[in-house]
Amino acid sequence: MKAPKILRSERVYTGKVFNLVVDEVEYPSGNRAIREVADHPGGAVVIPLLDPSTVLLIRQFRYPMKEVLYEAPAGKLDPQENPEDCARRELEEETGYKAKDLEKLTAIYTSPGFCNERLHLFLATGLIKTSAGPRLEEGELGLTIEPLKLNEALRMIANGSIVDAKTICGLFLTQNRLQANRV
Image (tube, rainbow, N blue to C red; front, top):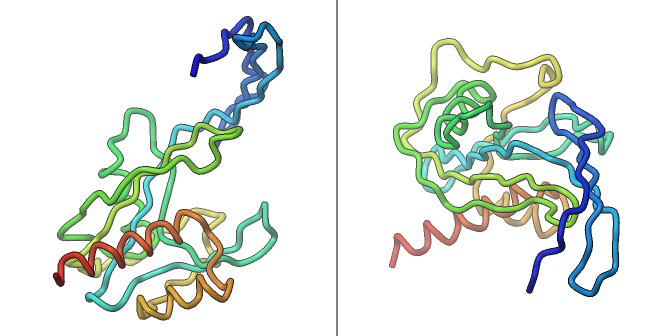
């Protein structure tokens, strides 16, 4: 497949979380179109295991959905930040735990139809509780830490209680990793 030719590109909005870019493109067919792209720096997601059968999730209010969601700890990459460093920072800030071991599971595109966000998923083990506890930002102040049995979290995906895509991916990849290690 041949990529469309970019005829004009304009950043029409610069935000704290993402920028909005509008491109005028020409497809190989000669047809022209406007493509809107949410330009996002990417982020890191952590699946923290307290023990081989217990995962540490968070519950927080998500403004775009206007509801409280179960999620894995995660956050946006700072400029020039390494994804593993971001994962360690977010784990500590949101849960008050540090990980002895952090293993990259994969990276995913969240919504490639309109957004270039790439999330790096990590499995955290050997958790150590910090004396400082979580360090939450303004929008996270109602966040709660929820230890769940991994098999219960997987059931919650099936019954629609866990609907966050990054968390679903991370939990299934964690289950697969744990099963592979048992063989």
